[in-house]
Amino acid sequence: MPVSYSGDLRRRVIKAWEAKEGSQRQLAERFKVSLSFVRNLLRHYRQSGQIEAKQRGGYQKPTIQDEHLTTIKSWVEEKNDLLLSELCDRFAKDIGIRISISTMPKCSRKIRLTL
Image (cartoon, rainbow, N blue to C red; front, side, top):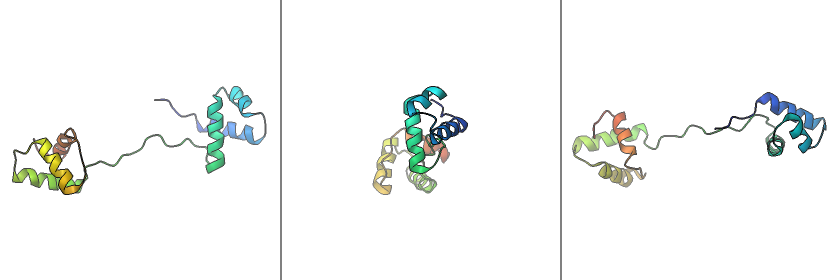
């Protein structure tokens, strides 16, 4: 995965642009970056006033929350021969969230069950 340009380089490009030290194309050549980087940086700076790179990725909340684990555990304790597909179907019906069969074993490891 590519790495964002440093904040120092970004500040130098912005400072040169504000001082009118050249066109976007000239600044790109001077700092040895692409023209699209300079354009995008300046657009981001004008719109938000920020120089820092936008966040890449981020934390994604788990589909199955902790409160769901106790529900699943109670289902398995009621009937311990449920298939993963049956658990997924019941989860979708009762909780309203569709999950894949491959997600359910991860859930079972969290609640220390062997399905």
